[in-house]
Image (cartoon, rainbow, N blue to C red):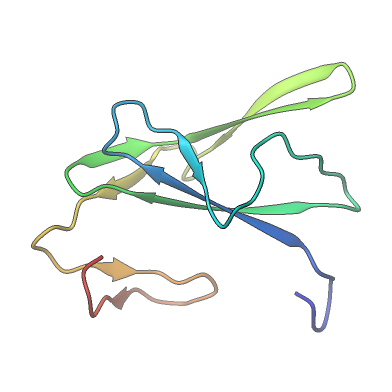
Length: 110
């Protein structure tokens, strides 16, 4: 968003392997771990990549927050229902790119 409306917003990327017994977020690209400080004038964008090679998983993400003496948890889900991620070993894979308008078949399995 450095061109046109809005301004630069830092992004942070995280990876979650759903094949692990207790999935945890892995940091990407040498960035620092939580906590992050955000505000209306200093937002952050978090990209979360979730994958599995062996399971069909329904999941949601919980984000704990605090502001002064207040605390809470925001549930990130698919409109009130869990997200679903399935293994695609020996099956075709599809991606829905950010800003895209349709599913695109992967040319390589990852």
